[in-house]
Length: 586
Image 1 (cartoon, helix red, strand yellow):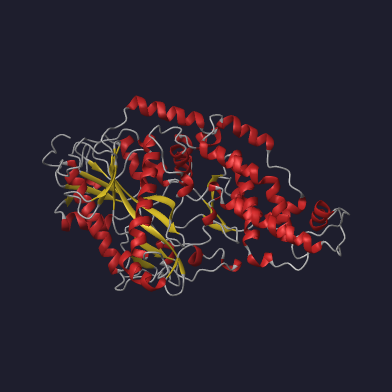
Image 2 (cartoon, rainbow, N blue to C red; image 1 turned 45 degrees about the horizontal axis):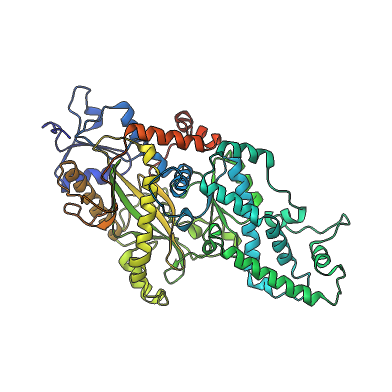
């Protein structure tokens, strides 16, 4: 590491979002003193710590020479973990076990809602197939569709079964290709442009596009007539065998439901009878650039308006609803890295829940209501508030925030039917799965980061949704996460403790005063170590990857990915695109 110059020891520079909090913690709790960035001449001694509250701080690695003894709160090239599209491709590579070469990885479908990068034609085609199958599945899931009095009332079931019969196997094949990572990725991209989407009849497109039901005026047979002819050789509305037809339809519908449930890539637990999807701008956060859709055409129009630089992801239709008025929530987990190659990952053991401000509803009039379907604190804190009026620090906890102990207290009655109790379920099931997802994300982006100065560290905010069984599903990882400076006293106090202990941990690690375990049989751990405060060590690699190995891995990965994605990920394309903003910045 080298000796820290006397004139640099205990000196810091802080800029950007979160500067007041970091400045106060360093000066009041750690006894450091600040040097203004504008007062730092080229000949002056550099600070021991440089903190930039924006991902723009990564430009330091190009503009400055980082000394081995300096601490910087970013890693070079770590922006991929905060990009929804880059993280999607990286996770697919890791979990397909085709690039990592590191043994069996956790299957992606077990912790990440299926998603598609619409920049790529193959991905767009796969999404269209998935949307159609999901729409058909939603019809089969709706109980009221299973009580038809005649074939006219069974129109939805007939269309759903016919659609599934035509495209279900093709959708499964496409998804398998995406998850496995075909070696002919660029050839497949060209094939997708040529093939397009399988030909569907006009009624099938109307059925799953959200544009309504169209009656035949061209003399062709209706879906009901085709179904009757296929099964009984007749098209009469008063056929005496109509009861037999309905019975056969019920059996076929239930068979399809069982078939879909047994397909892992369908993520049956995420689906429901509403067929909702969520469209995201991959470079934005704080709830910006996110919209929910249940109809296809409005979704495609919005994606086209964004030049197709969008990620579409399946919306969880059975989320865990908390509080007395049943509100949607997600879980924010703080994760810190003190090294990326080799990886040393820490997790704060008390995540907190972020609640929507209003009760959850499937009413289509509320699909675009961010106070119903989004949970970002930066969105919810403005529900009913005047954004133009500065607010003093609140003296009471926010109604849309629930710390983990408060969640467990609510769950005693609110989740009393949870097997073993909610607290035990969290400890034995939810928490370990969250850590598995965190480790996968960090490992998947290691090739991007590569080698880095020894003083790099970084804080991330990982967001998870919990389903009704408290199974965690990863949503995203946020660079420069919300530091909750304007939160209620409980969350604000916990944040200050976590950040203070992270700074202490980072300084102690730099001095070699944090004894990391060695000789581990596997790198996955979950324990506190001396000098870590409340932070848990959750992953510890002992061997780093060399520069030649990293270059080879990057070359293999680039060759496997479609040109539309590789080109959009180039340095010039990134500079031309949107910058990632601090999550709490307003």
